[in-house]
Image 1 (cartoon, rainbow, N blue to C red):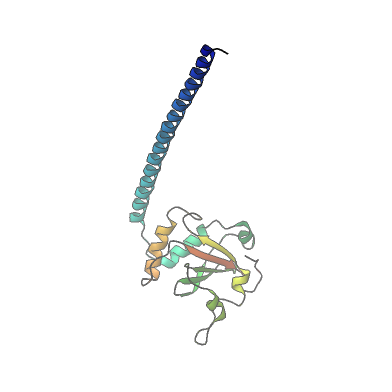
Image 2 (image 1 turned 120 degrees about the vertical axis):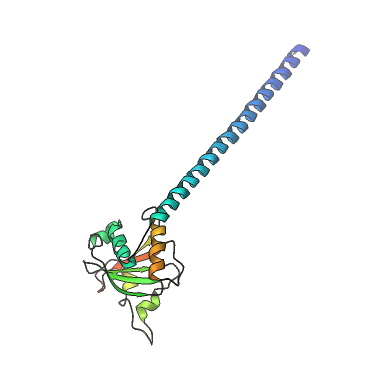
Length: 192
C-alpha cells in the first residue's frame, strides 16, 4: 500500500463522515420543522375547539334541569349488557335527590342512580339512624357503573351538565362528569 492509497482512503473516510454529518444535520432541521408544524396545528385545533365550545356554551339554556336529565338519559348510548337488560332508558322519573346525587326509575323498572365524583354512595344504600336508605340493599353491587363525560357522551355534555347542575344544586360547584349506575331494584340485573 502506497502513500497515495492511504491518503485516498483517508479522504474517502473524511468525505463519508462529512456526508453523514450533513445528512444528520438536515434530518435534525427537518425533524424540528415537522415538530413546529405539528405544534402550530395542535394550537390551532385547541383554539378552534375552545371557540366552538364558547359559542355552544353561550347558546345553552336549561330551564328545567330534571327534564334535561331525563332527556340526557334517553339520549345516552348504553353498553350492550345494560341495553339488553331493558333497552334504552325511556320515560325516566325522578324518585329522590340529595346532595350530589339523583335517583330515577325508567319505564323498564330499572333504577338509574347518578352521582358526582367524590360522593360515596354506600351510605345511601345502608341508610342511617336519621334517614332511610335511598337505594335498595345490594343495588351498588348488582348495578352496572358507567362514567358520563364529554368523552363517553357528546362534546358539550360538561357544559350542559354544568348549567343543569347549577339550577338543581345552586350551592354546589358543577361537576365536569358524573357516574351512573343502572340496575334492577330487586336484584334481577347483572353485575358491574
